[in-house]
Image 1: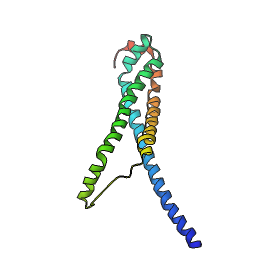
Image 2: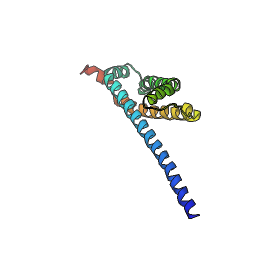
Image 3: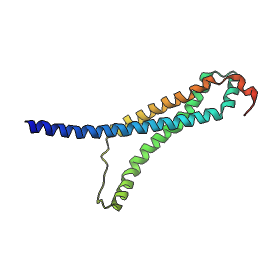
Length: 153
């Protein structure tokens, strides 16, 4: 009985460590995605600072400009997520199989969990994307309407 308990604990720890590695990797990917998107959107808003200021001087509200930049940030990244999932489904197994054949593996196949691959992970990535875009375009509210009067620097 004690041997069974020890064996079950070892087995569970191995499974738990694999789950820990998965969640750590997923967290690192999501954090990297968020940082890259935030920096990209910050770059765009700073580059277009004069234009945003001019729009505010013409009467656009901060919410209008924020919505526009939110859509500009979300649509290309969401298309990238969709295309990435599609291409990994079409080409992923063949490319990995070809690479592993060079290393001596005879056959290779993915075991794909459709719920995670096609629904849960893309939704998590889209939520991370939306949060990072909203965080980075918050600075649009701080741009004042009279900045356009100073001219471009």
